Length: 404
Image (cartoon, rainbow, N blue to C red):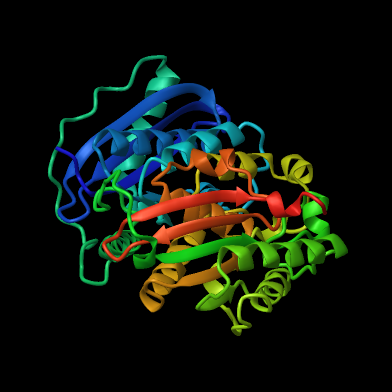
């Protein structure tokens, strides 16, 4: 029977570092403390950190086998917790593939939270890891894990507990998904043509060109201006939007100047509504990668980059995950749907937020983000219906840019 939320406790170690090594992992019910699964193994001669990552991977695999949607992963390894949260660099080349494997498993769940705990609160996983280390030293397999057993309930499900807070957050995200039509389980399926006048139409526009887009650098929260070509793109985009919608109810923009300049050019040709900034439409925060090229990031943060590419729930060091961006763009879309029923709204934003809006509108997986290309000043059109229906009318229209 699948469980909704679990706690994973993981540990690993070696006798000698490197030396005979092993790991242990326990999966618990967060409400009762019941042990749902155990994993342990000797891994030969290795280091503490490798064993700790192997314990985390085993615990996440066990949680996935149980059908869990939410995981709280508890480890007494500060290094693993900080690296999986994207706050510390993964400098050791031997840990990078393990971090990438763990990040790939994280992507299989709706939510994973990493927590550091003192060793005395990780005794079960520690005991399994020590038994595995003993087996590694003796050259034998560790004893078979005990069957599922109930242990005294732990205080992890109180009204203000992390597990309950996570469950409330997931429920809130699901409600937003249902409201915006991005939840495929509740969105009506139909081939029947629908009257467009019932829908809230969002004309999604990526900002014009900047120096960083030309140089293919990560461009997140840094406020870089449009180039001369970017301003020409904004004018051409304004003419295209005016042809699509001569009058619009609102023009909403990321607060960064590359977007507001594009939005102001559009507003001038569609009835001159005021441009309203919405912080939820801002670009992803790329943290310490801001202003760097992909090659530079690959050279300096290879493990962190692999982990980030493997999961939308992993953030760049000191940055923001795509999952967090998707949550706030979902809020923005829901506000527009509620505020402008049956009207047209121009939304000027960045490549990451627009990709995430389109991913959710199409009920697509995360691979969609790597396969969709959005040009600067490209236009996409999305209709949102009152009953939750969604129609993606166009994606990355750039015909208006042919002569620029």
